[in-house]
Image (cartoon, rainbow, N blue to C red; front, side, top):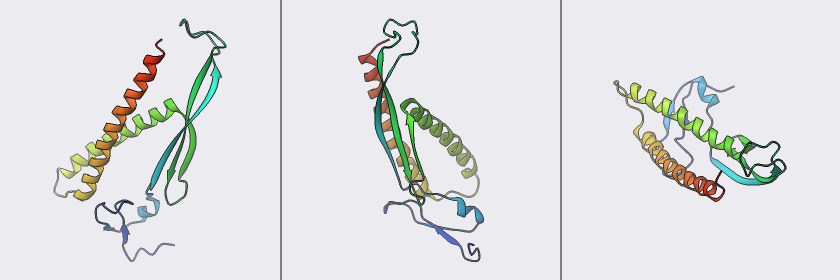
Amino acid sequence: MVDRSRPEIVPAQTEERGPEAVRMYGDFLDNVTVVKNSMMSLLLAVGSIEQASGKADDAPGKPVLVPFVEMKLEGEQDPYFAQVMTLDNVAYLICDLTSDFEVVSKQLLTVASGGMAPEIGRIEQAREYIKAARDLTEQSLKHLEAISSLHPQ
């Protein structure tokens, strides 16, 4: 059982250069998880086309590469998440997480427009992560477009 008579100190992140810790009270803190590291590894398998799609190159039995990604999130529970997913499903997850993050950041903007501001160090750190994600996502898109141009439909 957690002693709620004393506040808990929640670290901003695992990196040393992050914002200061914030003193907080509440039972919901028992459910807070910090992802300390994430990892993705490419896994490839060879499959074959089952049915013709009507495209000239997609004949039944034609061998194709099927990309998978082993994805791990490490946190207090090591690993917090570890699964093998298809490449397109990982891309969907990134899109879905980005969509959800846009919603919560818009909600935070609405709330922060009132009298109480969020801890600015955390906002600045989040901005830096989102900028890096934007740049890396643009590079990922370029790689996928290059793969598509190697094998046009």
